[in-house]
Length: 247
Ligand code: NAD
Image (tube, rainbow, N blue to C red; front, side, top):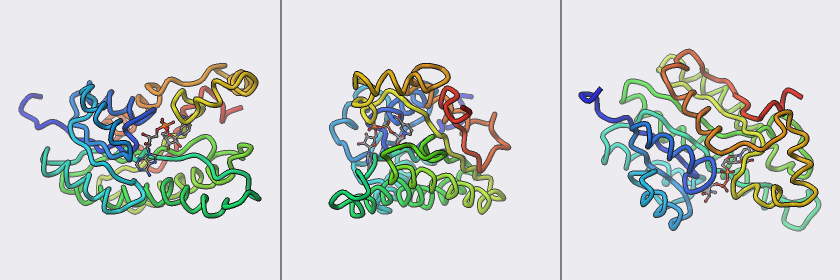
């Protein structure tokens, strides 16, 4: 409807991978996209490619960066309708390795505190818009004990119950909060595994669909969860994994 103002989405971790594909998809479908990422060059490229309209260079773990991004959405585009809290980092190395627990603190800060900070920053603006939807990026690693990534697994599991609890808390305010749990997806995060001569094919063979996901397939699931088609869905974790978690 041309009389309606464009909808506005905040996407964290938008400079690469799943976040980038999501920014692209929302832009194509008429949203104004506000991006938050640490990677300034990546954000410049994202806007040059018309996949984002504005951005904040900052740390998703930092509440002030999330508030700045929401503030930018409201000041520049007048509203916020959705937030995709997708920024995330990998594991902390073997449990007994030097500095493992210090690295775990950082993985927790980005992957879990970052989602809480993003929800906290977004909800007042979503409320002001008359309601809205939030999607956090968990992982199949939050549903199972994937080998070698204990810290990452822990944070991705934490996102799932964070989302459930807050979905319950905000259900009467027309703010829906869900998560996706991607399986192996072709991004910078997994490039090393994909290219590995033994691991790459081994991982693909374990996936019932026998292939990795394209980031666009994750973006479509996020789109669905923020769309009116999902108006009665809140507090769920949607695996987007070619059947991996069903197996
Ligand atoms: P990616 O590395 O391609 O992109 C991640 C983006 O997040 C990058 O642009 C990076 O700069 C940004 N980022 C990292 N830390 C940040 C921080 N502290 N503040 C702001 N931005 C930050 O990775 P991806 O595969 O697209 O991962 C996106 C999300 O999907 C992550 O939460 C990841 O855990 C999750 N995930 C990925 C897979 C996969 O197979 N690729 C599977 C399951 C879940």
